[in-house]
Image (cartoon, rainbow, N blue to C red; front, side, top):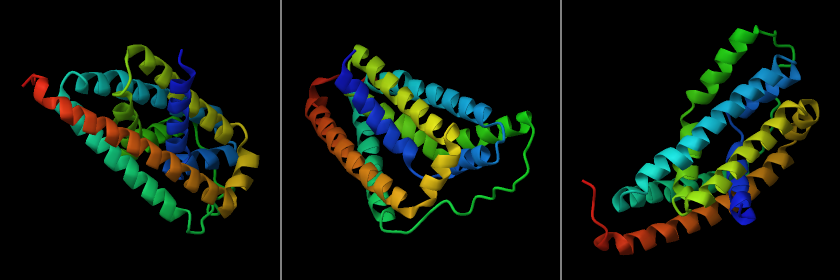
Length: 218
């Protein structure tokens, strides 16, 4: 397995997962109140594995069979990643912390928390942009073997992030209540997103120059 490709998958995905959002706040809250945190993390991880696999081996594989679809996904991916980086950079200048988590919230049943976790994960449009559009678009640049390493890197990033949130919640909650933590996360996220956007844009331009010599399937 190509270690560079694995690390690309890990860094890209970790940057996407680390951005503050509804799912991360939800996980932190369940961990702080000790509400079936293991089940929450397992459900989130299984969803990530499914969506990452769909992006790398499903959507990207289908799009790669036609140059016009490849260019379309490349444009969507590079545009979204660039916008994601700009939002992260702007966010770095805003003071924020997770101070609104109610540690006295009542615990819920295992069935209820699984349903809530599935809802906050699968009904969130951002999860599909992150896993299917961005990760899927980047994997267009890879061959079959490289996609495996890239997907493993992305899945490892999901596992690492969920472990840091779920199993080290008390320390993580203090960490993430500090606005400086999010400034660092946002700046690093922005830099990685800009690099990925440049890579995707360059790849899309290369595909555009070849489009005249590739027959369409339509």
